[in-house]
Length: 425
DNA sequence: TCTGGGGTCCTAGGACCC
DNA sequence: TCTGGGGTCCTAGGACCC
Image (cartoon, rainbow, N blue to C red):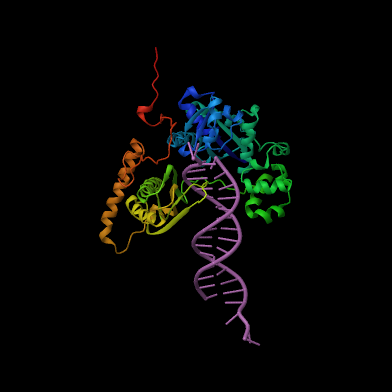
C-alpha cells in the first residue's frame, strides 16, 4: 500500500484567526502587523487581491490601507498559538504521523486506500476543521514534502480545487510543474532562485530536468535533495518528534531606542524569563547562553554586540540563568548607542531527564530544589491565569519601551472575561 | 519618526591531535 | 638546506523556512 505525504496549512492563518473571533471582519480587507506594529505579516484574501504586499513596513502603507478601508490588527500570538494547538490536535487524530512544522502548518503521512483516492478523506478533514475551529485550511497531497508543498500551492491557486489537490495520482505532472515559478519551490530562496533564473531555469519542471552535476556543484546536497524530490524520491524525512528544540530564542524590538544599562537589563531579564519558561515547557535544559543587542539596521552607525556564556551545570532555572544573563548584559552594553532591539538565545539544549548535579556541592542542592519548586509554581500559575500573572521584580513587564501593539485584539479563546457575549431575544 | 521573530540545516575553515 | 598529512570536532555565517 502506498503512503502519501500531506501538507496542511491554515489559509492566511493570522488573519483567519482574527476573523474567526470577530465575525464583523469576515469578508473584509484585513492585515495583521508584526511585533511593534512593524510590518505586514498576514493578509486576508481580499487584501491579497488589492495588491498590498507581504512583509512591507506598515508606516509606508498606512495611508493606502486607510484609503482602501482595510482593517488593521497587531499580532496576537497567544491567540494564534491557542488556535494552532486546537488545529494540530484535530489533525493528529486523523493522520498516522504528524509533524507540526510551524504555527499554521503541518506535514502528515497517511496510507492511500485501495482506490488510491484520498479526496474524500481530505474533504472530511477540511470540513471538520472549519466546523470545529472556524479556520479554512488547504491540503496538498504528494509522495514527498516538496511535492505536497507544490500540491498545496495548486490547491490554493486554482479555485475549482476547493482547497485540495493530489499531485501523487497525476500521471503527467509536467503541466503542473510548469505552473510553479522557481521562487515558489520549497527550499529555493532569493539567492538560489536568482542563480537559477540567470541559467534560464524559471519553473519547477525545468529545475527537475536540469543537469544534476550543475546543481551539485553550486548548491551541494541541499540542491540535489530538492531536485530529487521533484523527481519523486523521498529525501526530506517526516520528523514527528519536533517538540525537542535545538535552540530557543526570545528577542524584541523596543518601541523607542534605549541607551542605559538599567533598561537593557530589564528587557533582557524579561526575555530570559520567557525563554526559561519555554525550556521547562519542553522539559529541556540549556548549557550555553548568548545575549545580544543592536541599534537600528537602517541607521548609519549600525551597532551590534553579543556575549556568550557556558553554564557549568545545564539548567532551566530562572534565577540561575537570570544571574548569568545580567553579567553578560554588562559586558555587551555601550553607553553611547541607541539600542532598538535585544534578545537571548539558548543553545546546546538537552533533555532534563538526565540532569547532572554537582558532585561535591551538597550545600546548594537543597536550595536548587527550592528554586525548581518555585519555577514550577510560577509556571503553573501563569499557565492557568495567563502569561505575566506572576513575574520577577527584575523584569517589570509593561515598560514604555515594550513593543507597541496598538491594535491588539482580545484573547477571546482563553480568558473567561473576553469571551464574546451574545444577546438573544 | 516608524522596517518582526523564531527556527533548521549545511559548509568552510580553524584548532587540535597523532 | 630540507619541516606532513589526515582525521575529528567545533563554530560562525549563510541560506532557507514560516
